[in-house]
Image (cartoon, rainbow, N blue to C red; front, side):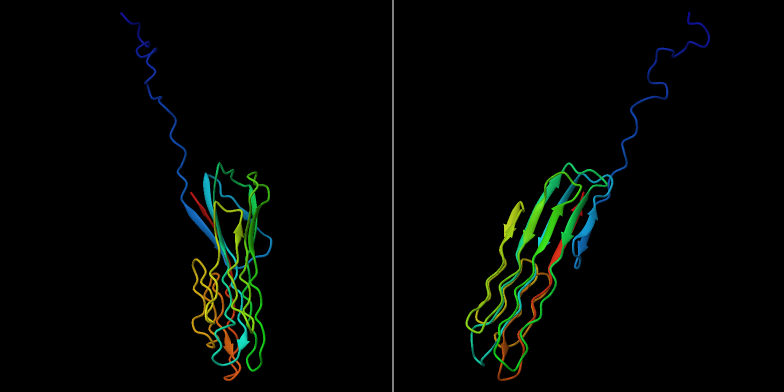
Length: 214
């Protein structure tokens, strides 16, 4: 006979059991189109991030009518997956600005695309990613795509061809030699301009940086 009040005294199931699981993390992506040495804070509960860094497209030259030169190269892309995150730790990032093409009416070269970067700040993974901008179109040459370092995958920007701008991974280049069409963001290179029609060289597109947390 069990004394009154002792029922279940040795029963570990009486209202106990394992603690509830921690709340799940809702995936979030932070995408930046501007920023210089800006701070990115890892959200609490995130365990992994995919960092994507796109460099800027270069701008194009103004060339003679009918020339197949002067197109500008596209910016590169670096992508890296980082695990074992600690909420509250930080990265630093810089996003490449767009660059203007050479003005119309006279021969002249474009401007090199800018680099986009991500580095560890208080984060302990030693991240150092750079996506370089493309090279500019000149009066005698089409520009080449930039290269990238520090990613799990690094993809060069596209080279310019026949006066059209090079394509980035996400943003196409300006289409048509002598058109002066700008590259599309992120990373597209500009198309060459035309001295005859006073059409300036196309602008190089800005870069981009994104952090996709899960």
